[in-house]
Length: 353
Image 1 (cartoon, rainbow, N blue to C red):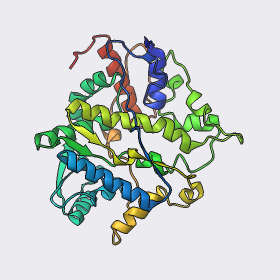
Image 2 (image 1 turned 135 degrees about the vertical axis):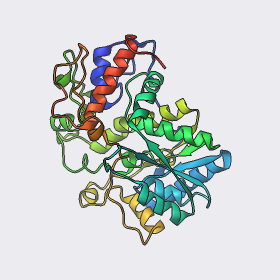
Image 3 (image 1 turned 180 degrees about the horizontal axis):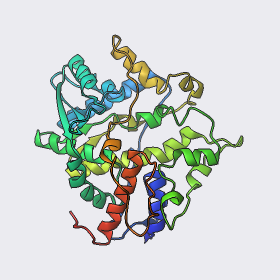
């Protein structure tokens, strides 16, 4: 039985971007929805097998749907681009801040598209899109949302308009194959990893809160250090996939995430990652496919939150401590902004969508 518990859910969202205890929700009016990984997943012990399965999954999607590719400037989706037929469509997201130069993946993704013979289209994202789409995404998700949902949702709407019923994403490669190199860079104790991983510590911003450490405790090994890769695959992976799944479902477009049909079936080579070879299986595929390209510096899907939230003074609802966003990054401010907006929706302080 699911019960309402705003204090727990607010704390959980700020720490983990999800509701850890699935028996709790923000509001019974907006029940939370969660993504499940494919029931059958292929074990992977080398890059050749991973490449084979990814190709198979892309080809299956193309055979059974009218699909396009979401193409980033990293390596995960460019690997999939090599399996798309020439002339296929690829979409790249570009956040726009008028008068300000921000991170832009379009130039490098355009090179990938040209290399693979794909038609490259850019989906421009503006702050107004976040204001417009965030409420409906939160209501469907049953909680505040990650900022990538807005970009995915708008891209899905464009794909649908262009006649596609499915978008293919390179999502989950980071979690599954050692791409989160900063989290894997050192050995963490429970306390140090709790503070490092939590997106916003609830005691810093909420008057009533709980500190949720059970998910990390589960992965503390005998030596006292956290098995970070195991934690990522059991907790980080699911909220991440939830964001994609929710946005696509809201747009009425199917989603294909080929990497989620696989899992690493051998120990992750932590030392290899710490020597600069993060996500080494995916890198190996990329290097075979694009021998003249340099592996790009890894950046998350660009979102200019620092610019958009530069002058935001923080939440004003009674649940929050005064001046609690002081010193925060733009991404952290987004979580605060989004949490306040969702609480306003629950209380009927803003119009539903």
